[in-house]
Image 1 (cartoon, each protein chain N blue to C red):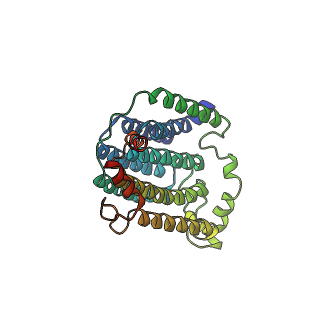
Image 2 (image 1 turned 120 degrees about the vertical axis):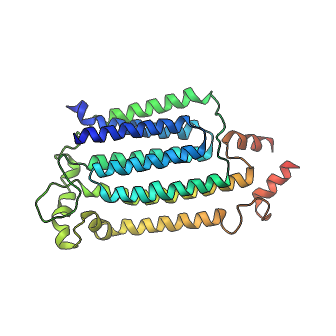
Length: 194
Length: 117
């Protein structure tokens, strides 16, 4: 029964993903992306990952969608019909890659198998001892904040770098063309157009 | 047994390939980033699905002996979601900048401008 719910939701996600390929209005595609993320969040609840579910719902479905809408307001909302020559090549590449990946899954332990190697090492110790060693009843919190605290610190570094990059790219009124003429690309473009 | 046991993974592979296809076949830069996001979410689903234990519950201690799903992939993916949004933001900022410089976000039009100049 639980497996049926999971598979049903995965099919739903597949339908949304296929719609993303066909739809050319980028506002509609952005909304579909939000629905895709939200469906994934619901799927995480079915897969027992409640912390991941609310992060995905807030950050993946929320902030990403807002960022994309902001980008669309600064650019164009309609995609050009793409060249049809590229289709067979990319389709072949995708089919081969997908085939290889599916071949790779055949060696994996079955879905939900409690004897899979992933469940034998490290994780049982966290489950048994984190209550005494760290304290919070939520094991994910214990690992995130304590056992794997370095990961979280590295994550903060990544966010800082990304924020600095975004500010350097579009910060301080640079986004309007012609407002600042010192940067090389605007000068090049204007020379070409004359 | 193996057929039923791997079926969820196969659908996830299909989801990944749809995202991959959008990235390599579409020329619109915003659509490419959306394809990248589809791929990314599919990888997250793959990890979380590997952590699932049959009959398990969410890894929160309640005092009773219970079977828990594996919490380690959950932690990895929590980090990955936030990093994914950071990279998406950077990519979208690049798109805005490219639009400011070239007046278009279609790959082939940018290429035409480059060869003309």
